[in-house]
Length: 131
Image 1 (cartoon, rainbow, N blue to C red):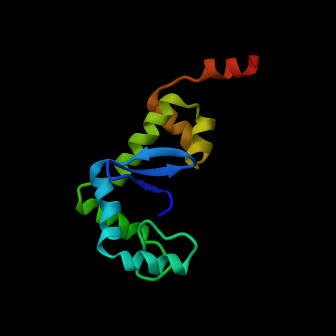
Image 2: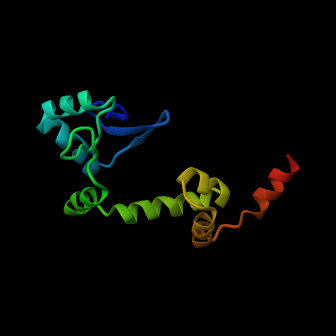
Image 3: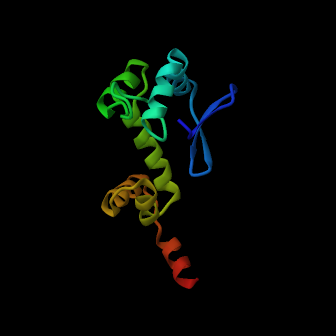
């Protein structure tokens, strides 16, 4: 929860020093559990050094990915579609090797995504070879 910035105007994630603003629907999902049960957040904080953004039923454990996916879908948020859109946007701007490292995926998966984006990185490779 220390990586969530909530200044009442917007909610954002702090990702290694960069602010990632959240859409209003997701911001609501971030604020709701915290506002509903402040004591629960304090309990989770004592159980671990950093409280979870989406705490699970047991202290110091996060909400399971499957359950979180179901909760997001109840609010008409499709995480897979959003993730795929983000990867496709990154694939248009980054070469496969950088995308793989940034997204934490394999080089073959990143190469597939750059293929979907139909971006040719040969000029980038040639420019890097000259440096």
